[in-house]
Length: 130
Ligand code: FES
Image 1: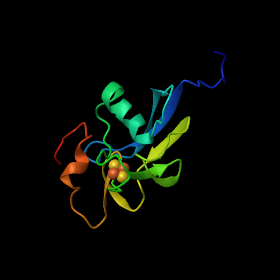
Image 2: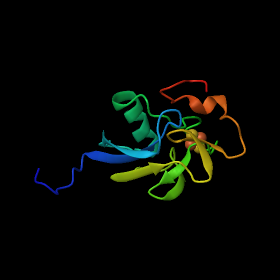
Image 3: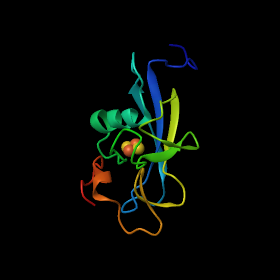
Image 4: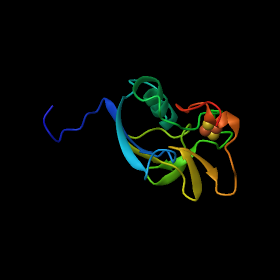
């Protein structure tokens, strides 16, 4: 493949990472995830692949996975969307929603809440139960 040529068989996922306990500031981390040959590959599936195969320290919401609970809302290419319902484009930037406190990576709580609900921490590499 020549330089500048796009790799069609992967999704380039740029994820905003931040652990308030250890990081001074948020930073982007880029991952390459194999693209599905058939079927719909949502942003949640991209994160799941990263968590299970590349980086188990990644934290994100993984609850109903059906567009019901609204727990997985994130900024996907600068637009607030549900990760479990949004098909991932070839290049995707995933950030936490604004005006929320970041617990870790993509896990957030509204500014006025102390702690996330227990079930939303299922995909935290750090702890199941913050
Ligand atoms: S995980 Fe419930 S809406 Fe996406």
